Amino acid sequence: MSKTSASTLSLWSALRSAKRPVRRTLLTGLLPLVFLGSGSHAQVHVDKPAAQAAMVSAAPMAMQQAMPSAGTGSAAVVPGATGGAGQLAPVSPEWTEQLNRIVSDPPPPHLVRGTHYVISNEDRHDLWLKTIANKGGAYIGVGTDQNYVLAGWQRPELMVLFDFDQVVVNVHYVYRVFFIHSSTPEEFKALWEAKNEVTALKLLSDAYPHPKQRAAIVEAYKMSRASVLSRFRKVAGIYKIHNIRWFLDDQSQFDYIAQLFKTGRVVMVRGDLTVGTSLSSIASAISAIGLKLHVLYLSNAERYFTYSEGFKKSMLALPYGDDAVVIRTRARPNGVYMYVVQEAKNYVDWVKHPKVNTVYQLTHQMDPDPSPGLFYIRQTATAAVPSVAHPPFAHLKSK
Image 1 (cartoon, rainbow, N blue to C red):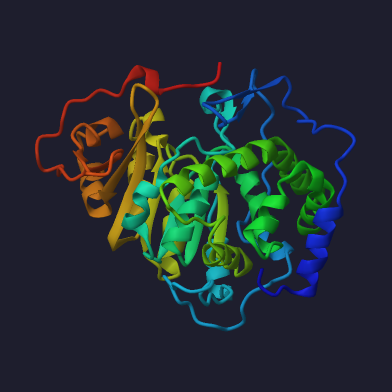
Image 2 (cartoon, rainbow, N blue to C red):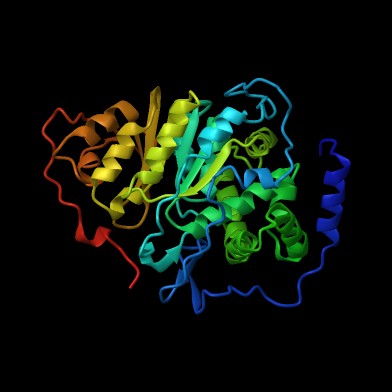
């Protein structure tokens, strides 16, 4: 283990000596709960509509300022650095001003399947590693843990974590604190363990002093903790088989993600792709600070809606770089995901086309890669747009 600061040693000592809480975690306001998923991919399911989770911040950067800065001084940005964390300067007042103009969308009336997706159930993100490695620039992604896996490979200069479920956004605020207060992946993982709940709650309380914000984030932590640990173990097993290094077994990747948080380069926001207001404000902010979007990760979100005017407008407003890519997944009938790559220029042409209204038109004809599970969208929208209806089963809502 590398030499650590006195504060880090103190934290690690506290982690080792912390006692297991007497009472089990209570998921307040979300009863009754059952855990659903494939294999170890537990998700938190709400059997009946639950009260909306509290928003943690009106301005995205306001919560960043609740934590004392641990930046690296005035060092210049070195995107795509291959050793250590690279040198990331704390964001400037101009960046902060622009990022604070990012707005949230209204909460959705329903959650997909009535479920909080606090972990990913996609297991082969490594199929995208060569596509996104060291791209730098800006990153936008939906979901939870998979974003950190992808960021460890891309090494973006700005990371925007975007999801329509406020609980998922609140989970990212937990990640933020744990990244900032951990010097190694081992310390980071330990903060998710039940025996270290007292230490974790103290860190969260110190970071988020506003009672309403703190309560929402603590609830997200307690709700997700067991699932997150299970997810870490599963991903570690899969990547070990395929000889893939990721942020929880590569100190340099871990350091880089931690520096993104410490320097204020991560924005967490609730946004609805079908509305487009939040995403349009993200597009404006990225453009204003002079960055280009190099990776847009959509998971399989597009299967749950047809392309609305708001969606198309916001997608076309994003400042894509010349080599930008859109990466998404599509589930096979047996539930196994296909991992799809599309150049952003190609994607824009499809989105612009007046006859395109569903992702199923884009994925109708894909080119398989020699690597099983990896596919490319190369067909252009100038060719005949396939008449593919959006499947009625795709619109899954909680009852």
